[in-house]
Length: 201
Image (cartoon, rainbow, N blue to C red; front, side, top):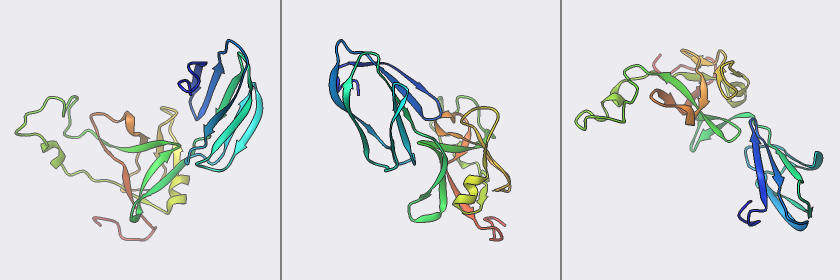
């Protein structure tokens, strides 16, 4: 956005939970079209200008075109509500990833057999040995809708979650993938319908 306007958009700020705002810094008024993309992960995007609702889009993959005369100090706010959802692995509808808005969530599987810094300084003869440790990955019980309903926000952080009674043999704590370091994790989860035989049972 800044590059196309040669730096005339500035004082940008952002907030968590999918709300973004930008203040416009102009030497003089200018008429132009600002195109804001509606991402696939958001069902409805709402745009406000100077505190007043300008437009609401419900068509993912399109652009919201704002054609107007802009003045110094105008503010644009974009509201992109973030929700939990699952996405299946290609060709395997019973294996899903969990996402919150555009953020991929990873399930924490503990640090057994790992030490801080493992993988940074390694002996080339033993490199990869830590990957040989068998780790039991929980199965999620339910269809995609049920799984999403039973993932609850955790108290520790705004982007930390906890499955509620759908993990077998135990529940898991999904957190943003980019927050994982020096511990085991899982991204794609095998799902089972209630009553189906579980892996390893």
